Image (tube, rainbow, N blue to C red; front, side, top):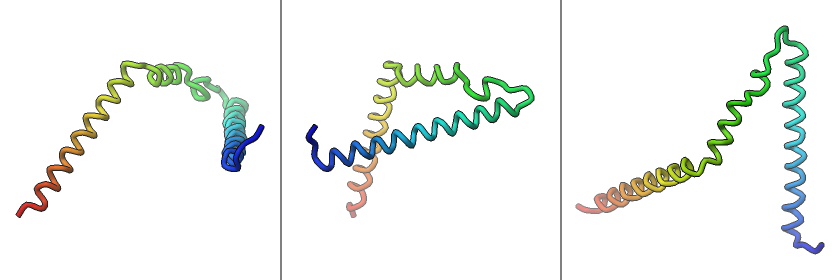
Length: 94
């Protein structure tokens, strides 16, 4: 496979980041294991709250909320631009 130097750098950076993510996952696992082994009455909800994570994932992929968020973001950006235009238009009037 032929690739440019910058592509090779990007691939190597991605692999290094992948290793870092794996180490982070192992650290989280070890802390969870430590909690489970040492707690008098371990609770699964302290390790992982499945319902909360499911709701978070569903919210990420909900199209209607995405579109509403994008519309709100566009409106707030437009309002900010209008305010900035008014400010600079009035600033130089004497």
